[in-house]
Image (cartoon, rainbow, N blue to C red):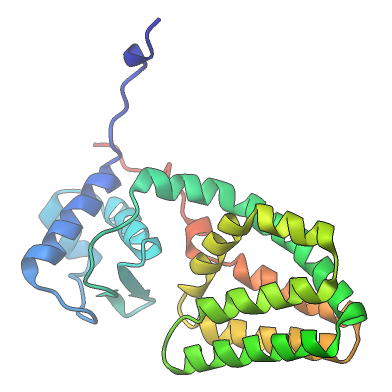
Length: 237
């Protein structure tokens, strides 16, 4: 049987709401920081349930297009409306837990080994990475480059060629999880502070403390809006 005759699928209602909301943002001239209409008003104007509007707003939020302030409404976060398609978003959501599990398993061990094996040059690079991220965060940036440099420096300080190779094989997935974490509201300063605690434990030569600090950091990384979203939820038409 030809694959062309596979069952047809219909877009979920909230996916159609996402398209309409993006059209509204483009046509209404909303600027960054402007508030979108309340959920109730959007639902009435679109002729859908508030649940479908809420689902659509979650999609826009995890795409980085809007910021939801609990109790304070939804605000445009960026004017560029080019966004990740919903099906790609779903695929990323599905693979993210495995990536986070792999990071916790590998990077807690790397932090432990770094505390045992670090050299003066390793510590200098770890400190430089922390300073790099701090400067980025102070400029109002997410600090992704400093974050990447920090985790690379810890990996190098562990002096384990096998673990370093494992990290290289999932580098793209790690970068994806980094971006997802750092786009969370107020996350960059928190990640910076956690990096500083990991660096302190490595500098002090405390393997257990370094591993524990890395584990706490990666569990913070895992707390992202994308993983609390249920893409299969929708309202009947």
